[in-house]
Every structure is written in structure tokens, then in C-alpha cells.
Image 1 (spheres, rainbow, N blue to C red):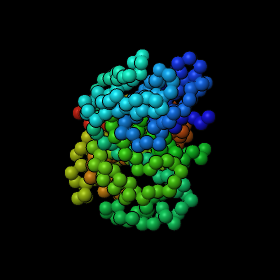
Image 2: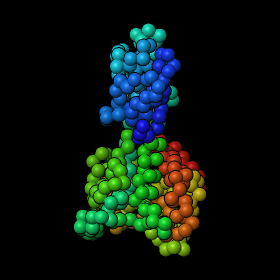
Image 3: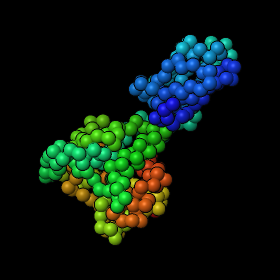
Image 4: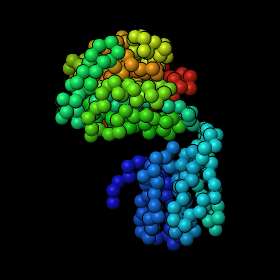
Length: 336
């Protein structure tokens, strides 16, 4: 059988114990033993991820519950109501059926700190950019001058691409922020495409009216140089209103990355891990508080060994999520 596309979050047994169902956060159902498949929410556009499931007494159906309390019924499972759309800010965490299947209970957990917030994530470049130079080399206006629509990005000496690193961190970050209740807007859905142009990426996040945004990158700096840099916008007219909040967010991101990843601040770019930049479309054209992260130097052997590691990628995502949460809830970021 295929592997889940999202984490498994719930399980229910058949009445005779001869099988069981697993449910993933995207609503996908996986059957084992004598558990029959009665449908799934895997093809639905969910407002919030699935967090649990319960089977009907005869095993002829099941209920799924989403984090917002929404109920999805399959097979002979009857709908008895839901808490979806109540907007109480407290996430559902489980569902349990009554013995006769005539009802169910929902369990709720702690409030989600980012419920109602929108976060934009732009994983820089794309996995197939190298195959489409006629597209990515076309000039676009970045708010101050012309620049290429996109580039291939850099790579470690091993061949591990920046585009893959960026996307892996973005997916980990999306999961962390989603668990806190945020709606996450990604500028690309996978690492198997081309583009979009940097101007389009900025528009996607601006049009979503994100509360804050981060562009994820890794640098191709001098091989002797180490460390990460947080790039922040310089006022150009379009982005004037978000310069001050972006600078605040940049400091929070710098502190969180320094405290949580083991990657030092850059030895060759910026000052104490911070660098204003006026030549990047993502920062020039932003209308929401935003920073761009160079998470480390892929041309440096020590940095590259960290950057290619899933452990480091998750640590970077966790640090970024902490900074986003600190910024959006006005909490203190981890101290450097």
C-alpha cells in the first residue's frame, strides 16, 4: 500500500478486532485486516486537518473529526451535528461514538494561538527551474529594477539543491504553524515544477493578506564563509508601511534561529545576522511584514552538512514557527 501523504492522527478497530483503520491529517484512510474502506476525505479541501476518527458499532462506517470540530461521515455513519464554524478558538482533538452509534462526543484541547492568522511561506526557486531557462531568465520588474523571473538557486558540493532544502523547511514550517491554528499560504505546491516568477510569489502572499511572511533560502556564498542571514526590506514606496514591523520580525527570526538551530550568524553578510536589501522583488513588492532567510551557506562544508540534514531542516522550521508565533502574539522571542 502507499505511504500516507500526511501524518497518521487516529485509529479505530473493527468490532471483532480483526482489523483497523488509520486516518491521516489530510483525511486519507488506510485499512488493515477485515476493516472495509467506506470512503475518505483525502480529496477534499479541508478547512482544518483531521485529528481523529471513530467507527460505527457494526463497522459499516466511521466518523472523522477535524480540528475545527467539523464532522465527516462515511458508510453507515449518521451525521448528528458538529462544532465546525463555531469559532471558539479551541481545537477538537478526538471523537468517540456512543455504544449504539446514535451519537458521538467531541473532545477539545487548548486554544490555538494562531487561529485566524494567515502566514505566507515562499520556498525559493523550484526543482525544475534548471530545465526552463527561457522562462526563468525572462526579466521582471522587482520594484526598483529588472531582475530574472527566478533562478535555479545554489547547491551543496554533493549536488543537494537549495530548492529542495527550501521546500523541505517550508513543509515542516507549514505543519508546525498549522498545528497552532494558522492558515498557511505556499507559493509553490511541490519541488517538481518551474517558477513561479519572484513577482508572482510576492503577489500570491500579498493577495492572501498574510499577517506575516517568510521567504526561505540557503546561500551560495564564499566557501570559507559560514552562517545565516535574515534579509529585511528597505522602503521603496510599495512596502513603506511594513518596514518597521518587518525589522521587528527580522530580529525575532534572528534570535530564534540562533537559539534553536546551532547555525551561527553569517561571517560574511550583514551585521549580527541582519541585512537590509533593496534588490529583491519579494522584499520590494511586499505589502505584508516579511523577511527572507538565508539559512546557511551551501558552499561551506560545515554549513552544508547541517543544511542537508532533515534534523536541521526541522529545527530551522521550528525556530521560524517560534518567531512567527512570537511576532503574531506579541510574545518575547527566544533570546540569543
